[in-house]
Length: 419
Image (cartoon, rainbow, N blue to C red):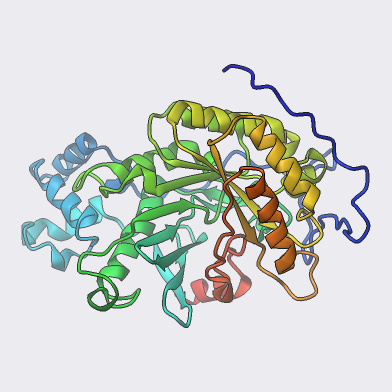
């Protein structure tokens, strides 16, 4: 990579008068620390029982072999895949093209249950649904389905819990339970597509058209996607594989996010899958980001931005910078200027910034910036030539917005009651 000249930017020693600096601090929970007193980072998944092997965990060739092991001809694998990836069903009663005598055994072996729906919450308008799922081992995860004009987006989880330990994110409070399997990731989409087909996101005959399905995926649910790299990438490959081998989605409609695992960002750039890449930055200066995003102790702001720029150079795909605007913490005008300078120092036209107001909690230090402050932050970035769009905060009334996905004590009780 050719070195890009950097604009030297210095941060003021103190914030200007009238703009206090609130420091990040956990509220209502204790952040896990390592032996040196630093926030604990969990990159490896704890050892737990693996979920059953599912059709979506296998390549097309492996599916054929598995079907043969179950005593049926290989062509039955494609029939199963058609039901699952095209009709979004695992229901034996819907698979009348399979031999009745062996249908139950075949489906049990190829399409074992992976997600049990514990709870479904909807917004009043019915355009956002949050699902709480129980995995085979009792772990709980959430996904959020959202209808927008012209598209339907699903926010998927890639891990049960999260090991990145960011103090403002509800998901990270309990740490990492385990990585999700490829099929568990895919099943969230298949189940969402079934809900859409059944009219659960508004009757498709009234609000859209027959055959509606999820068009966009954002890996912004529970977990750090690039810490579960192989399974996430295997899931992406199934998403983009043509039906019935996969879900037949466009890679350009899939967004993979990270808090800044630099080696994995570089690896993603070499995959030759043109997904949208999103870097959750939240602060342009290491002093604050060290506290907001503990992984910044491993890979600093400039390293993460360099890797993001390399992603653009290798893929031609514009990078998204996610930035949660938090009142008096990271929303200062000088931080908008610093962010713009750092992005422009790496060239023009390669990046888009998505500020999003943090979901407010009354009386908390973690609350959304004032509207005029948000507007000023966005204006400064746009004036500096950085395309910037304030993002919609969908689902906050059902705790389904960014940073709010967490399995509560109430959720755990509901899951336990199901047996």
